[in-house]
Image (cartoon, rainbow over all chains, first blue to last red; front, side, top):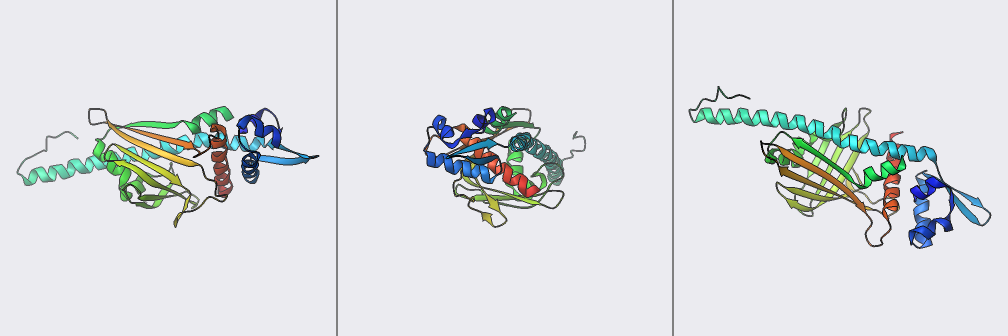
Length: 109
Length: 159
């Protein structure tokens, strides 16, 4: 729907057609978008015209990039956690080995 | 611009190769104490994390922004195959757990995480997020719209 509205404003009726959905469903969906201030709805005679708020689509698009960044940055941190875990495991392994009388001092970390 | 956003959101697949054995990556992903060490982007901390790792069990993560704002994420596990795969369906959450979306008309968001051994002690993690509406075939644009709403709400909260 946002894609459709990015081309031009449309009436509620006009928005119902391409989506093979009931007008009720579409209206509900539009209400959702109005509430979120992604679109605005204006009365034009008997029809309601729905217009996309350009600032909203930019926010969404920026956020989409942030969305990926969110995971990438979390994964960077996860990577650091794993490095610590590995170090700890090697250290624990050493302690265990020593208790069995083995020396791992030559082991390269 | 919108097109790119749509593609990003509908096919969000992120892979990362970690230089660690699979069991370790699995542990870092499923042990709350460890998750709290990495959950959230740069500058964020994670003050709380609960994980009930079983099918039907839930998780509740929290991350705190540098300005103190807290964001809660929750999901219910629908498939767990240790140490290879986790599938969860997300829900809106606050510090008390699951909350119903304001309009009661939620879209299902599902995360599939797979852990793959790729040799040399390395693990390939694939994170896949998908959105779909149950029931009617409402088309991907609507799904994106709903996500956009969620984003807008989130953005409004941040302001």
